[in-house]
Image 1 (cartoon, rainbow, N blue to C red):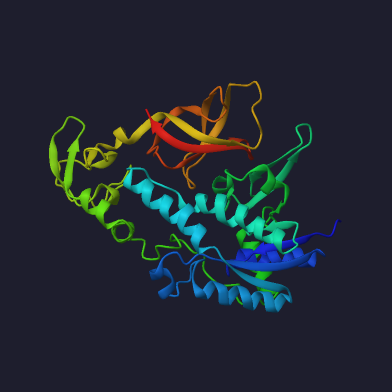
Image 2 (image 1 turned 90 degrees about the vertical axis):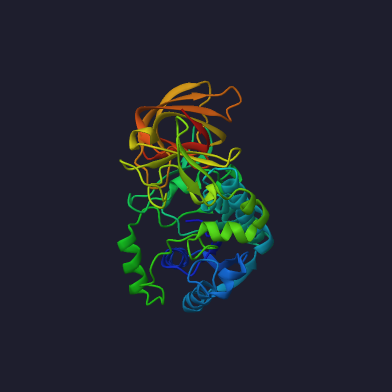
Length: 365
């Protein structure tokens, strides 16, 4: 085995802690670093247990001490604000539903982290994500595959990683289950062995997106509040307090009385309206995907079949893919209608467990 110098992104959770432990025991020269992303003062003040809080730093430092490895805290606040918080805010105010975790993975947790690791003399980086890194020898390309624990697989949120990152990445947890990782942590007496997983967005610990948007962009939020809630045929059913409070497929919180259950089927930022309808109106078969990143380039295959995920917890569904001439866009046509295809979310393409690539959903039909 080649001994590598690896810097592990340690959030203070059980996954990244065990990743560092496993790599050290394999004989690599390992160190750890936590990314400080306190772009929101509220997040820092609450000392939240999410990855941008003080508790995560304290736990990661204690694990590093237990393992006997060097440890740093990186201040990426400026970059996090630009690439994650500002992106999140802008997307919601455009009537789209962003995925800040994917944006953070692309710009902060991998690309920027790798750059800082190189400055410190480390050739590789590692994280505690549940995905596998594989190599396609004929095409000399690294690619990702699903983690063996299907309930924890995180390959979907890693689709934007570029080839330079993949060449300098290791993912030690891809062949473990979550239960096995917790057991490994307990066997090593790590302080985070029983620490619960974080569920909320790290910079909005309250999960109150509307209040966050109003604080970040008060003028824009105020201008786009108080608009109509209507049906597709134009019937006004009520009034909303800001279209950015709603996302496609949402049922709860509409605040309108109707003879049947209503769901958000679209948002119209230009008219400041929410369009609602029956459940079947939330299903669609086709979507346009842009800014596509390929792990396994389709080559001359502009039409082929794959399985596609449109949300992290979405079950992969069979579809026909039509690749644009620039390879940066794909039209996806599912065999069966899918629930709440949502602009701003990611569509990731699979061949069995192998991730072919993915991009951002621009529209649906």
